[in-house]
Image (cartoon, rainbow, N blue to C red; front, side, top):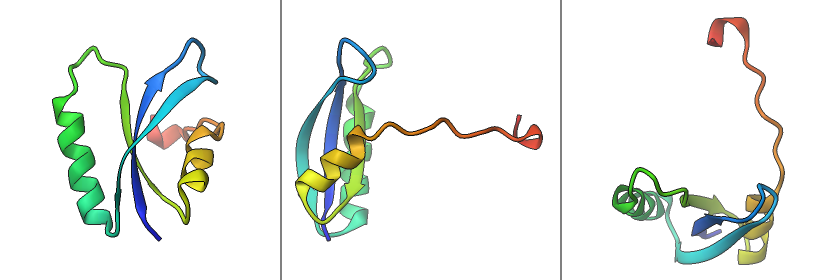
Length: 79
């Protein structure tokens, strides 16, 4: 399965964001290095996110990125 690198631009609300597929790689190492280089180019005040997704298809990767995830519960020792 390929690794997809996406640029996520914030939308008017948290539920609405714009996904832009940048590249597709066969190995995680290549995708990770590409994503790191893109993140290094972003300015500190830029709200753009760069994410790597592992999925069978481009559609599945986009669905995973758009899923609403619950915030992790912090344990007392993690604070």
